[in-house]
Length: 152
Image 1 (cartoon, rainbow, N blue to C red):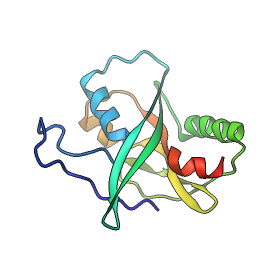
Image 2 (cartoon, helix red, strand yellow; image 1 turned 135 degrees about the horizontal axis):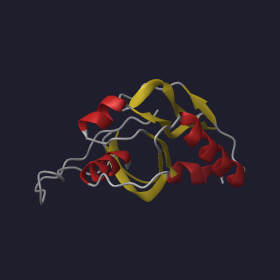
Image 3 (cartoon, rainbow, N blue to C red; image 1 turned 90 degrees about the horizontal axis):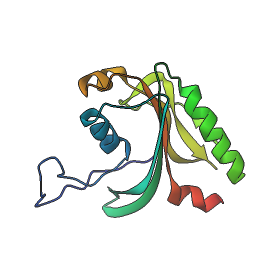
């Protein structure tokens, strides 16, 4: 399991940007909350850097975020994309139970390759979406490219 601590900036340019991203999802949700004009179905992805501390060391990583939004979504929509990606890469993976607070209970999981957690998959919690004034459901996954490339 990825255990991380947020890296806080000492002199941020803005109070909105006072830390470095641990996950790509958080900044995507903020962007979507500020610009709620999606055309459906919406398939969005981002490949970018994240950083966190682990065992008192700063870890830099590259992560891939895939988000799908429509009037109705299911974690199965994201699972289809994930299966296709891993099939193309010829890498076996499995999904195990997770307990992320930002995902709906029972509709989420950790993504494992060779018994190593490389990401998460699930439906974004509706309470979070409501608080951010995001009107339609989201499902997605986020994986560590750095960890994934060990197996390709």
